[in-house]
Length: 322
Image (cartoon, rainbow, N blue to C red; front, side):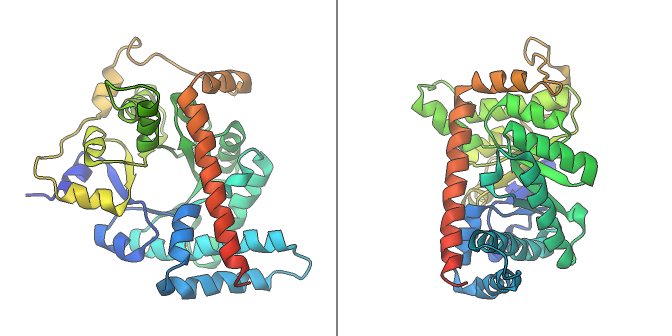
């Protein structure tokens, strides 16, 4: 009999380990890996990864003397992400790496940073089609994803997604994937009096079904899981990234894991159930729809602040070594 993780994969869901720990990645054999400032900060403190940190520091020191301290630190952070990402790629065959969240409201700077990261990967021998660039789901970030996908052939994962408006705008921009945060949406729901359902499951299911019904090629990468039940209720989502503790809990399940989301059900849903939504490049329409979703507004800002704080902690850690 197939293991629970194999059953999950049999529903059509690609499983990704949300960790930068190589042992955990090897254990779960995911089809893709990821890095973000939080994972990097935790991993960079482990003695076993000192060699990767040293390589990133060497890159930072190699920059011209004209580089400012901030430029050197930012470049070192990117180099560290690529060092970890390269090793993750060797275990999975694909990796996603996040652009500095501080650039979330600057389209040209996001594009420039993404291309710098790709050059670092290319120097490590990774082909461009093996790397996804993670960008925040702001209007400016989504526009950067549009440019990177259209003009540079760069695969983009629009992350920090907390509502349908963000997902639709990213899909219209041609992003390869969007990452809605199941657990954080559910947390917001509980704090705001939603007691009759899991708001995270409802929101991510709506995003997945909407994109399938209206024919977008953008995949949904469900993230930030709190428990196995959330995994069960989203079985069949395109991509699923979860922490090792969640994947371990899935492996201990005894009841079969069966499809909860299917393309057939999404495409047959009525317009009343899944009403059309489109922005067609209209920034004002997007901003109004986004602003009308309190969870998306509050949790997007919170997530970006958290990633920024972890990036700053990582910079401080590296600064003591530079």
